Length: 357
Ligand SMILES: Cc1ncc(C[n+]2csc(CCOP(=O)(O)OP(=O)(O)O)c2C)c(N)n1
Image (tube, rainbow, N blue to C red; front, side, top):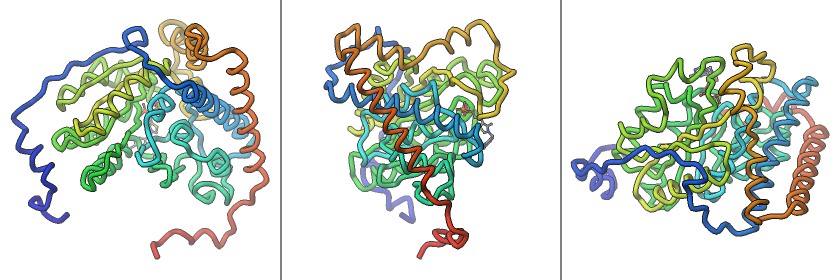
């Protein structure tokens, strides 16, 4: 596309409609406000498996990083499982996600191969990036995973680019952009939400507000009390949701994804959560208050919240849950063995995949 006049008709149309603003509210959702729809039992099981795969992947990454087996940096997603899982449960391989430096959970939830991911963070040649990218560069284009990203806020432009592509080609695919509350203070956030709004792009912005950007708390760095309310500046719905509650995230994300798929434009979701560990492995976390609000939030485990809910509602039994937990442990053990047994890349591989053929 070289010129404004070449824009597809529907984009021209949405440009002409700019005077007819809808007005949106910011809503705050917990599972009690939501009608949890009938989710097929197999889907509930696969959701629980994904949450455990993320948790087990991260606990293993922590263990092997401490042992010196994983090169580079790792930023763990443990504690935030309900968000990636709850969002990606409504996506297909045709949909795209962009991720962050804390990206393992997004990649697992979007269907990234556990063996390929584990080998990648071990720096092995069988990894998804042939061992040359590591933790912050895991990508799998066949699964719509456009990549983890070492640049804070780097996913915004990629996500609206993918959404633009989806709209231009008249597909019903959507793009989801995961980002932290620190990234929401980057200029790129505002530019991309604005563009997504004027072009009604099929994109969902999912803010993972884990309260800290490195050591800086949100109350210190953010001019707005919530991230969700910033949606109103760009004329899209903003929803704040309990990010520790899988079912709440699932329902909110499902609505936003359907909205994007059906051509109604973007949504900004703020899922409030907490990371179980430091900003990166090795972070002493001296900035965290030992008591108080944070402590209460830190004690909420998304896996327990899920388990309590499905048992209370009679959706799964204790035996079914235990079976899934065991299956996840086995899969992660197999991924670790695969990574350990795989070779490191050969020196001559250094210059492969650098230039396009
Ligand atoms: C453009 C850019 N600025 C700064 C950094 C250094 N940095 C890495 S992670 C991080 C904090 C990000 O916080 P947030 O977006 O809230 O994500 P979280 O780590 O909480 O998941 C910063 C400042 C970077 N990698 N890229």
